[in-house]
Length: 288
Length: 319
Image (cartoon, rainbow over all chains, first blue to last red; front, side):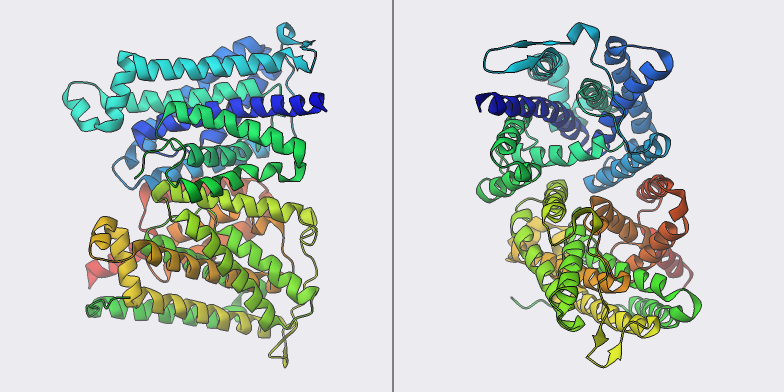
């Protein structure tokens, strides 16, 4: 009983870590660029696939993938921002959403054509194989690693954005981009790099997810829908909000899986409905 | 509802609209003699779906990313009503449409509490909720969907199993839905919707209950999307998970954008193109997704007015 419950809670914690990482990237991009990056799921999927292909075709292991994949995906995102996304600034933010939606379809379709929809498995790196018995539950080492690393990344991002000079620029750009440009900060480059960073974060999550879930072309769109709901629940206003909400909803999902499994797919959306009813601006959002 | 002064519609716009309606009606009326009727019916269903969606996006400025929920739920309800409960087709269609409208009311009340991109994400979330419910409930048949839905008889007289009579039945429903949308966008109510789209704070300060207008537009749009779904289930004779899938919600955005949002005829043109694309490319599997995505990006980047919008612009320049 306790074993099963804590097992589900661990899965929930891990899902929650991914939700937190992904909604953090979304929030950072949205904050500055005012674009809802629908391609975020596709970039996460791309991360997992780049890692998998690196291992399959180039023999690069997990650790290389963890460093190189975010760079590759981030670079692609920078090109995308420069070529396309940039043209839509100043228009209704809905167009940014639609453009990235189109990009997500293209990416998903291409990978589906090449690799089919069945999953590819990615091995857990040798260093993190095995696990330890905590008495009340068995903790696979890799899963512990995922939780710790995502927490570290989330905390690191929070620290950079809230406590450093770079973060101050970012926050200033979120509030008043024109004024910031007047002070001599190269805002267009900052936009590009922010988009690249957000995408790299998604790719990083994708690499970490590869050994846990199957690497499939559809993994991105499945998770991004939930992440959008997480964003609605938490409100995109605050970084801390998206982290806490992401983790919290992962746990809620885990609990639901334990008590009433059929509802676990829909529980996040139900929570979204309840939050909208009680606090329309989201748990951490400012009232409009 | 307070009274709204309605300005006379400029003559140029009126003739433009009359011509485009005439073209739509002629093409719709002649279609089954030139193309396969089932294909043409499919186009009509999705054209109504896109027109209903356009009422929301093009006139109220609300982007819903979950309209498949209304199309799909109506398709399942109508299918179930006609097949299992043995209701006549008219009642089946009515049931499907009513369920979609109710669902629209339920989601609308919650979704209009946020606007812009949040609205899009909320509707997407609710549509996912509906999708998972359809997957799990037993009467919907899960992965297999609802198969073998009979077409029955129109008014208990004319058998609809003949494709040509079914076509004109669907065409009549399409025209009825289209007329309702036309009436809505040209009514004082429609003008208020446009005012809200252009400047919500000002509409609010003029004393309009903005949320009520939005909600009503959402419910009308959901109900008509449901009507389209009810028609579709009778045409294809099955309801499947693809009808509630988010790909369908994306496709309706594409149809509207491609044809021209905010134009009455645009979404129908877009529906024709998208259905044709899906039909003729069906053997290429997922490349359809890639091409759909590519068309999406091109539309957003290069011609946001859509085909009908661009033509309208040209016509205006020449005359």
